[in-house]
Length: 116
Length: 111
Image (cartoon, rainbow over all chains, first blue to last red; front, top):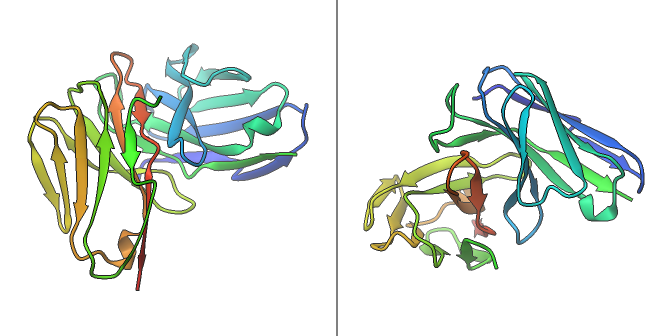
């Protein structure tokens, strides 16, 4: 199994508060991703990173920011959480160290976030 | 409109029955992947199909890529309770190694 750890696994927060989710990998792979999963929508890409300090937006990036200061860590921040951001969040990494060739992705076990 | 449309959204069958789930698009893809996701876990890759008309088998699971590389199907023979899960098709969009998923088909196999 790929070494991907997401924290926390569960979080309940209130509308308007900032929230940061962490993804940590032990594989030293270049590409990392944040997805959210909602019923009927499969997984939708929020942001991704192709190297330290190199990030780009996905299809549902509004209300989210990311940072990658080290190869192993990719942080997702909700600056001011809203109820529409209640979801399950998955981190993923490319299956090869350099990625970029459309190989498969390895996924973490997810973070269940509830915004009340 | 989603890039990948999966049908049905939900399927409940008895152990031993066969089932087919579909992944359709109006776009042409160089390859297509199928993932399975179990409750509380992330998706895990089952197979990648690359060639139009290609058929791949993984034990009781048969995957087919359409001749025009716009659609795919997954057929499960003699389903077992262990086949229960969410089945997702996915494709890489253009450059950047970004994987796009369909909405998924939730399969429940009852003993």
